[in-house]
Length: 331
Image 1: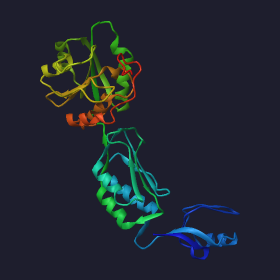
Image 2 (image 1 turned 90 degrees about the vertical axis):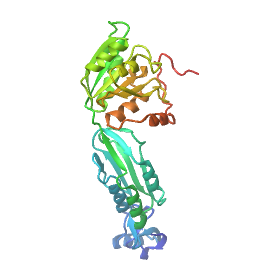
Image 3 (image 1 turned 90 degrees about the horizontal axis):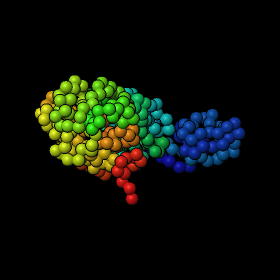
């Protein structure tokens, strides 16, 4: 692509790089100049304009952006592309799910050509219907076809939407006081809201004494695809009530604790039939974001995080404080 100032007589067929004010109105940048435009520029006494002219090996900005965007979502579902405009194509979710991104390949895309760029949300970000997952932007008025083709090959299928595949959950609440009303209070509403935002249903809520055997019996009786446990006292040890109950019914604890705050006191694992069980930290009683959200969302989408992946959440895991926490971070 050639870029620079040319005489108006040489400008036909080129892309106007900078807007020009004319007596009849503004001639906007990005306009492909035709003979009428050239005549209007000449009549206005304008001798030179700055233009970009595509060569035989170049693609215009819109075609280049659409070519790359199509490749990025190739073979996937739940994503749609916007119409190209000024070298930009946006990638939107068409349903609730998690952004599932191959970061290594997307880094490779951005290393091909400075003029061909891709920006995304963080990997595993929960997306609502219509949410923007990524945007492709060709910075110049065109790009070398070879660069676009290389970027498309490197990034083909690297942007995905992982749909929610877990339909429902049971919430088991332990209490020291049988009349606490925890199952209908603000904490219950916050947890139910989390599930609703994922398109899931809170199918059952069970209140039991704060006792491992009672929790084990409730887990054993749950019929839903996911089980949540919210204990009256913080789960402070791998042998505490919640993890102990999961082991009593033959389940395994995958992870106890996480380096995300709020949310440290989480545990999660699975029953023998594969159904996930999450021991919620006390901060889950608040609707504010906490570490349990990241684990819940992954499990809801059928992509359970490994213990190592949870360990890696610490970088970026210092979340906004919840003022109502019983033990805030403080000074």
